[in-house]
View 1 (tube, rainbow, N blue to C red):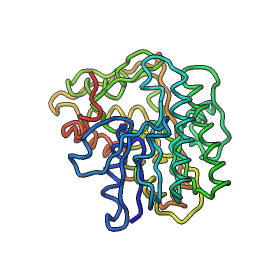
View 2: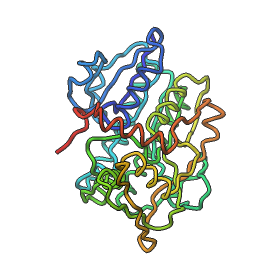
View 3: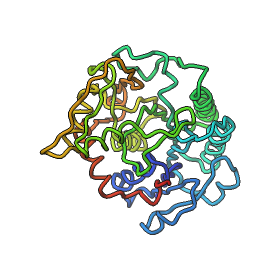
Length: 332
């Protein structure tokens, strides 16, 4: 039976990708194996094979399956949004040394392919032109700031993957992630090391109370809002596709304006008898989103996004109520 090993299965994106993969693949043909740095019995209680592995430590890989590995889905990473104190060495250990160890695992087990998640910030300096970013654009990013070494570490991992692709014939599928929307019971992140409530949770909290919500900047400013299950669909299709390589933007290709986003949050979360009102603050700065060109993912993988803005937030509300991954993701 072909094994699909998912590194980063305890992460916010990885846990939902694991759930999707378990439902997507025929269990008589594929076996899904979960791995993450955390020691937990969460997966065992659900009958899912799980191996705790710190990808920066070569010896940890010995516990993993060594035979019949078909695909390695590499989602584990050190990312800026969860770095409470700036520690640049963490990017080196997790995203570069870790990449080397994952690729060595692929080589030793004769894996057919590796799927790797990289960052849209490698194209950050193209700016918000209103034109979707193509997947094959040359890198253009800022060498300053708290994201710089993160991007550099991810780009270094891409070079390592290219080496293993050319030297050992390892098939490679690269996925450029913008913000991936999925409910997480931990509502904070750490821009420049400062603990901050994520804007989407702030707006949802306001909407649930029927309180006014500020819309900063241009209401027509748009970005791609991709649901985690659309991301998972793209990854799963790349496991099956008969190709040697691919580079894909993860997205929907559908621009969502700030106006539509906030109006949708109000419709989904506000009380019917007391919906939130929008307060326009054009003098405040807003941005940070990207528009993604996904045409090659449609053509080469048969990818078809399923989640528009409304369906995304309806699922968000459902996951808030179920809170299925609270044990994995909850922090104080």
